Image 1 (cartoon, rainbow over the protein chains, first blue to last red):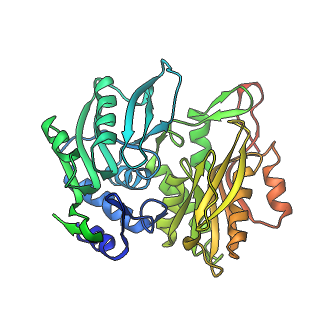
Image 2: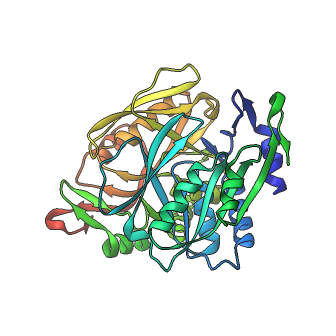
Length: 189
Length: 189
């Protein structure tokens, strides 16, 4: 998606450890029109996938996910992220490790928001090692529902996430695929 | 706003301690079309207020705030909430107490996203004791910017938040004002 790539080129800041900071339009300040265009793009990509629900993880996934839900006219569910959690019967829970924050968190979704009949489109801001997307996919699996696809805004194609998801048979659509952040420069795939 | 009140009547669940659970359309599962209608309503209410930026706090404020930003064609910033934080020079920080969770957290906004010329519309899902809105308003003040108004989805009018905000001279627009949750029943003001 050219609009997103342009924005990354203009405003993205490469930090140490292959971190790409996009807090001017996605992670802290949010460009609502860009999010709407992203929603429109995912709508087009997954229009034939029978999507009944959008799923993401708080917080940065919420803006693009709610725009995708608006375009596709289906509900959105955002998984809650917590550092530790007492196991509760009414929740699906998965552990997700964040390489950026170097900590594990519990990701939870209320059981009442996923049914076996659901076809879930997973949306997330970043795909790197795939931990968050895999955690969400496992939650969809716990519910006996199907993953209709995985829509990513920014993929770090030099990391392992995409490969892991494809290996499991998921369809992955990333709007901006980054081949390298070497030397502080964004190079698209 | 009738649409929101209808939804609260149909799907809201009153829990102990005056907690209103609205996780089927706002706090966990999100009704994107309702959020868009809410954005449209805030756009109408604040169209003459010279709004240059929308501000909210993660996570439940993000969906209505991004829709308001889409309608008003201005950027949205969501404040980060953390349990404790080392003070950083590049951040505005305020302490906010949550009566529901009975814990204090630090709310932060990057300094680069607020300028003295900004007129900020604060959006939040709930107004009860006013802690979150007051924290955001203080951050706007720290930046030397102005609060253009405060837009709330669900106001617990039987608690003190609205009064505190009005006393400070802020314009408060709440889309659903709840007079009482006594006996497990939602009574609108």
